[in-house]
Length: 521
Image 1 (cartoon, rainbow, N blue to C red):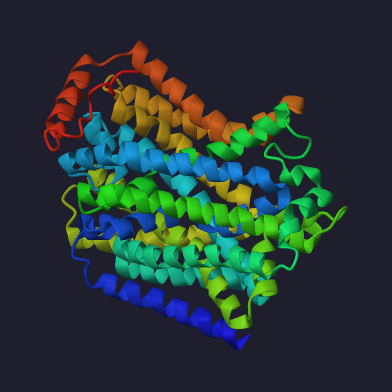
Image 2 (cartoon, one colour; image 1 turned 90 degrees about the horizontal axis):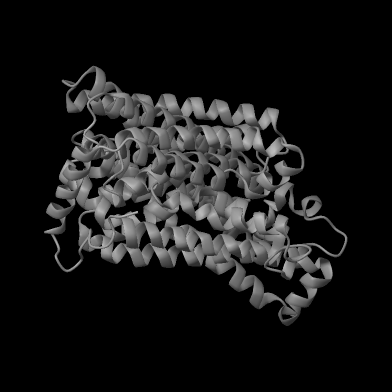
């Protein structure tokens, strides 16, 4: 146990040091919210991906791999496509526009893009973001308690509070830079640990060549890409639901804040390869950990939940204990906490910035000084963290059978459905209007709730919605509504203005035209 605690203390010490160093570079509100737009490609890419992956990756996706086997690799495909779309298709245009608008937040970008005359768009976006961010943060704090409980046999509530306190301290001290720098460190820890575990576990098996046959004997569906029973409409729905998880990278504010904060376009050109390779490696490794755990720890007729915990989300800890000595186990505890805390810190800073800058400063107190805004942002960060902790504790009491995978996915889907369709249309379709953006956001927000709590309970049809989960119906509903409203109520003046802006920013790099053949839908 001493070895485990030594590694964890060392890990937490590094986080605190990074928070302290970042605090020395905080001079104004822009430093707090987007780090003064100073991120290198390494920091931006690792931070964006560590923020997007979270505890869902190390506890949820590993558990999903153990539960369903090879079909969980569809998540890897979906994540790859989502991350590639974000960095290769959207990043450069978004960076150019936000620099032109001098945007500090994603909501700033929206207000400038649509030349808003009222505060309604700003208020709606900040409200929708805050609601699902709090759910997402709560899921991460919940995972913190579970991680301490699983690895160190702590009381769940003590573990959740410990993780909450540590993240709150370095977020308040160092703001966005602390979150980004710690994300870089934590992302590196995640990457190393996730690659190392399945590799060493596989090489240590004396009968590694019989894994396929062993999984088939446990449950034939484990080695099918379509799941148990092979191809069917139900299994197709499950596959679609898993493959479309990556849609959340196509405009979620917590990811796009990193694109806004990156130092320049040359850094995007390098960072896109880092982001894609990171995603493929960690996602593939996470599913493989679950598959290997299912092969090693279960047998025919044994349900994985009985051996590996609810949703098999203890498979990572079991495989680590099986494979490595205690001091290495401590490193893996740090890796799990890395996944959790990187996401919590990023989301806290983003939500606090949205409330401080987008709501209070822009609407109620435009004369707010930078120092007062930074202080207020820190206070709101603490308040949000406490509220999220309360939600996590409440959910743990009311839903003891919840799984980390789907708790996190609900928050992820809510943010994605509210913002991603609207961000995509705002970037690539000059005819997209403010009214359409508002309709798209409202639809995505409401459909996430409707899909989760109404559609999934509709008799036999509800089973297919449960298989799809919340992302596909809510995301595509928002996309379709945004398109229809823009067609029904066009704004030719706004369209002309945006086309002019695209032509202007295109002058930055004539070799990579942004509007040729890409501005029509």
